[in-house]
Image (cartoon, rainbow, N blue to C red; front, side, top):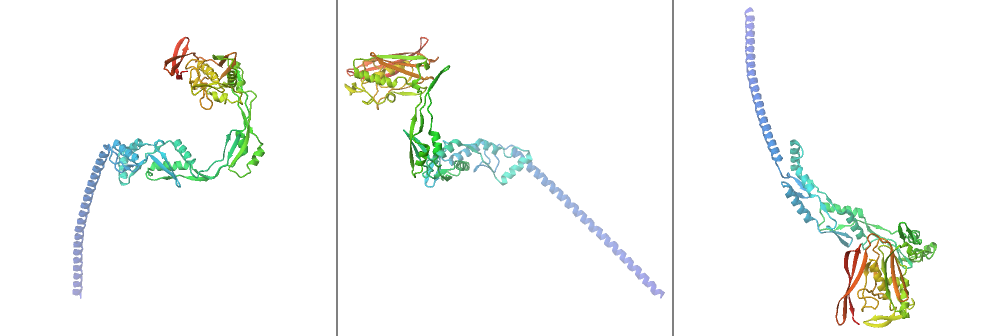
Length: 521
């Protein structure tokens, strides 16, 4: 029993010993495996570190190389467009030329516009269209060059991946564009016709308007400007933006307020010398109520009679005291025994006597004197007809024209229209005369002075006399008129007239004022 127990104890001890040995062996094996794993992990870390270092080094080299290239780049970076033009890798000069060529080729000489079947064109040169190419090229060139190296590189990379488009912007004469559009609107075949009125002699004519189309100026102008900005209309017509409008209704009260005018009496002041001319007034010849009744009829046009309101004091009534200085004085002689001719001279002179011309106003002999008729009192007297002397109605009044012409020359007024006679007249030298024919030949001159002038004339005792009054100034000159015959033939006489201006006895200028040809008797 004891022996058996001992054997069991020994067996147990042996088993324990074996187990301990196995545990020790297993631990040693684990330590070996663990050491190998630590060694492999360390190697991986070393390799990763080396690779990371290489990547960073390559990235740095790439970055600094990229930066160096970009900082030394004198051209526009890749991916930049101006309008639709790729300006990548171009110098500023090259880019400007390329964009200019594109715009010139895309911008037509005329912008075609249409409204239904109606077509019209606008001249692009007249609109003074200007694209700001220089500024656009400068902006394109500065892309990727204005920030620090990191910002610039980021912009360059971004532009490479997605292009940058620059709009150069443009300018044009917008007032001209709107004026052109308004003119086009006024000429549309289906345009709106506004109610209007005008004065024809002693009648007021009112025309009723019609509904039609008008161009929406602002919207059409913006549409045209956008099309120019996009340069997409070379071979197309732009549709005008229009709307239908109705004309204003006839407002007779408003028309009356515009037409009605009270007469103004002429007057003058002496310190300083000023002449205020008279003005005729105007009024309806019927009452406002009667005019409104006329408009009740359905018509396209209405006629309202007018009457002239005359002032109590006309400009010609102002006395010569308002015209303190005599500017010129000229006379011619006539045969007082010829009663008919004398009558004609007196009638013409009376029409002119007292005439006042304001500064800038033009005198017309035929308008002032009027038609020479029997009803006006004119008589038959000798006149030139086709190179012959015959009796004609109003004969002799050209002596009044001639006398006035010389007075005008000595007053240094501006002669606008003057014609010499067929023959040298008995009352004036060659190139010192002026003839008139009602409805055909007129004598006109202009008051080119800064102050009004007054013309007075008389016909009596064989003398026809004209005086011109006004206000002398520092700019006045002493006037000398001379004439001479420059040549003769068997059938003609040639002559010239000259005007010399003097100041304090010194000649300022001499000019030829006429060159004439006369027939010989």
